[in-house]
Image (cartoon, rainbow, N blue to C red; front, top):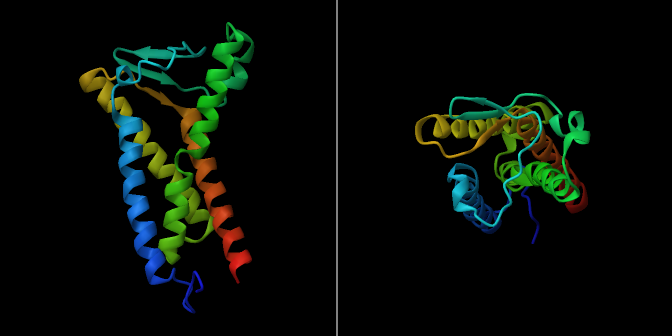
Length: 168
């Protein structure tokens, strides 16, 4: 059975599966991004260089902060954690944007995926700042997260394009 029909829509049995997975992943994103940091006691608390505090709201407003402050990271373990956080942020939106590309033909354009990825990321970061302001969730609004999440969305779009090329 083919993945896509003649109108370039995902075939019905696959649509149901991808929709279910996308809903589950949205719930997972909400849990990962909106619960207080104290819920994750096993993660070592790393004080990232360049961090700024505005009352209870914590931010890193320097683009490419990890690269800019690379020499200020105190040890190899902290460096590894910070790098892995950036890599994880690249892949945070990947499954969701990939699912959207599969399910919604009208967004299958580079500019639209770029905008959607950025807006989802901005929504996550802004919500984290609001949660910090209201409830002190110890989350961080990071410009780098906007960049890495958006890159992840673009990678998802490219993966979709590759899948379409392979399945034609």
